[in-house]
Length: 514
Image 1 (cartoon, rainbow, N blue to C red):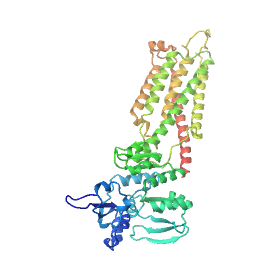
Image 2: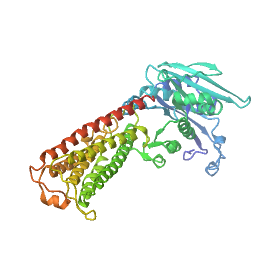
Image 3: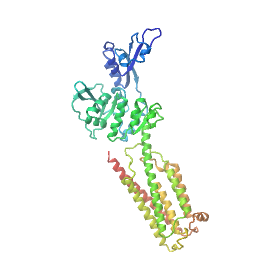
Image 4: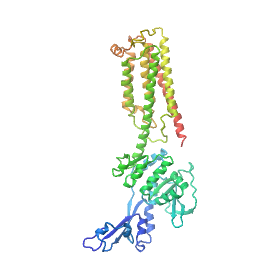
């Protein structure tokens, strides 16, 4: 409402959806070609807003205007015209849609705009491919007769006209071979009617629907919740206050602005476009895979150390405290920390990562790696005792004596096994970048490998004394030390083959679910 200085009455100006403004205007003020012009602009992808006005009675003062009901004044308006605004696609939109479709992630549009505008934008960004058929679903409920009807209107590719065919039952095939050929579109009013009176059609609409136009904020939230009930994991992007409910209800809510929507959404994008969506998906998958990777590494670290200690207890000895300190601080702690720094794989793939920590393939991987660890450690102890120079351990069980070849052998074997497990569990593509791109992790591996190998082949009396390890001369038992090194290299190959085969079987099972 506004008032010109010196004027005796106020004027009311109203803007809104053309079909709504048309219903509020005097029929004589609306041009005969209103619908044709409106439809023409909408189908070209323009956002169309209608504007109307009304001269208010002189007795309506500014004080009374604050308490007047909208219905009492927003009627008998005079139509002024249409405000045409162009919906310009952002450069990143179409490539992101292609990326998500390539990863078999369903994309749909829930908007408050006109249905025809939404369809045009969806085709421009390839959310609906150019050769795809669109079926518009319309439903209504007659309160007088209590009868609800639903009808379909098919549009072929980029035709500008819509041919309606009223039916009492709509056959919507959910076969996978047709799922990319027919896209369903519906407006908010029809969505509510179908949701209330046609549950069978509603479920098929959720599976096959691509465009949900003229949606109210509560209808967007209902759409998210309905998709979740069907088992979908829903990511919602929005930038306005009318998206708050759906952003909060979604499994992953992303606010594309720092307005009020950022309060409801757990994620706020620094970029005002949907380029952040594949980034979040890739990072989420990478984080999940990394968490499983760390779990398997730490679990096997405990088991490897347990087996080493158990075998050494069998000959009445153990590793010294400095040896345990070397393993825990220099090896395990640094590997576990740097292993987490691997970035996500830059390409979004159709395969989903396993979502169960104690799945069959995770347990199979850990079990096979554990069997290999036992075979290597037990085999090296047997090989050690078969050497002609080997002297059995002889000391008072109450004394703490560690400078035996049994202890040194298990010490070096276990460290190499930790390095092997850290490498093979760093899976890399398709969810993580290759482990050598993680410079901290790669540097850590090299440092631990060089230090450990230097201790194995070098002669460092002071270090050996500090670790309470058996001493040797440069050429003493060199063949046995080379055997330790070569067996660990062979163990790396076998361990890598086990993990690759297990991962390939898991990938086949995941892909078979599509």
